[in-house]
Length: 112
Length: 112
Length: 162
Length: 162
Ligand SMILES: Nc1ncnc2c1ncn2[C@@H]1O[C@H](COP(=O)(O)OP(=O)(O)O)[C@@H](O)[C@H]1O
Ligand SMILES: Nc1ncnc2c1ncn2[C@@H]1O[C@H](COP(=O)(O)OP(=O)(O)O)[C@@H](O)[C@H]1O
Image 1 (tube, rainbow over the protein chains, first blue to last red):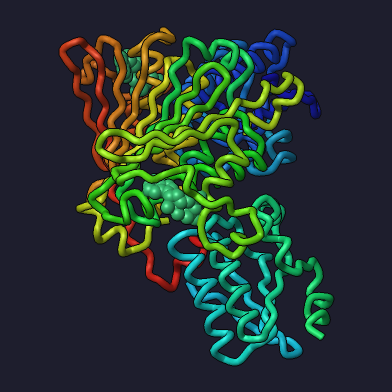
Image 2: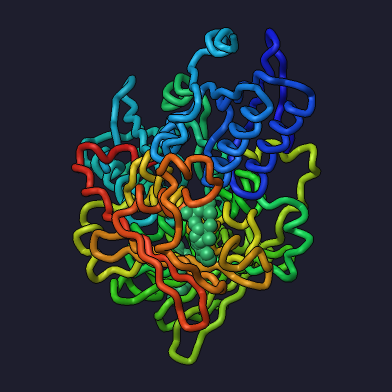
């Protein structure tokens, strides 16, 4: 599974599809973030509109991504969280770490 | 589960919902046909638009209904069969017994 | 859904589902719901899931009604094994069996209005293999087998992800 | 879905589902699909099915990854029993156990970036009861329990029929 990437006003937008879970979806998310960093992106937005669920392995990749992007001097933010994913990110308090948006324009504009 | 009944131009239209299967849906179909006959209907149309599946118990009630209605001098016909139900009525050759319609106007008009 | 790697390696895989219910009609829906979900995961398309699900319902319903005569202390059990590229199901009850050869053919003109006999017909229509065995205590064991669909090409497997 | 009669009589009912898988990540989806279908039948609403499904995924994933270290000859087994008004799950693996008390709390500031520890947190957040037992051979047995929702009033149960 390869995560689609697009660019808008200097922001790299990743849009994972389906399950961000152990074995496939988690690895795809990691690869997509690594690729974006390798390509020099410092503004990364993950759009979860088409994501269906996320387990603890997906969450592990999400916090790992936060750390990696921060260490490269960039920022990573989240967009369009479905209510079930919003729910588990709240319970695990991961949502305290990330800026989370419901509107793409706002999210893109928020990077400086 | 009670099957909704309406009347149009002297035709009694029954519209079973969900599963016409062993234990509930089959009994509901039998009761609805018995009630229609008791009320003196001789033109009965069963509209399967909202039916989701039918098993051999539903089919047994369907052929029993055909017999009962015929013996009372009436007619019973079928409308809007979903493809899965159409499929199993073909395999069991029950569809050879019934007049089957896709259009309600046509079906109603067919009862002379 | 299983990917093609999983299907190739199926020989060494264990994938087994068991469902045990007491003999009440409404419990048949549980078996149906569980097996429909499993069959989707195995890669069967919706139409086939619907057909195989009906065949399974008929076997379970026969165990509940004819075998166990709806006695709630008696069980119907289903075991589903995925082995190589075949889904093999076994449905057992605690009844007293029956004579398969004595079941009238529901497709002859005389029997078209017969209320019974269509369950086994549907099992045979939708499964690759249908067999009945009767254990010493009399219970019926129905075996149903169906080959898995061939694995989809990688290009066409996008929809699994959701 | 179960009607209220079925729920009342649950004491004498048998409703059991078992799923056995070899230790491959993609098989976790089978357990998830089967259990989501079963939980819908038990009357849990969609949001709860989602949450309980995730808790179950985490327990099974731990068995596959930490317990059995993805050795495909080792199995993870789930057993789900509906008794009275409680759904009781048991998930077992063939691993060598672990020290539950040594797992760091994933909610302390220090551990927020720790990749691990959230699975057990989610099980505890969503289930009424979570327990770990370790058998003599070392395998882990996770017990998860959740009360069934109260039966819907007859008036509100229309949607079951489809
Ligand atoms: N598990 C069983 N135990 C006892 N008798 C059975 C069993 N399964 C089928 N039968 C017998 O075979 C007959 C035909 O079964 P089937 O084709 O499923 O139709 P139906 O269940 O509608 O009668 C049944 O009427 C019953 O007499
Ligand atoms: N079935 C198991 N067998 C062995 N170790 C386990 C098992 N389940 C959990 N563990 C241990 O407990 C830790 C915490 O588990 P968990 O909270 O699910 O988070 P994660 O799986 O993301 O690490 C794991 O990292 C592992 O060390």
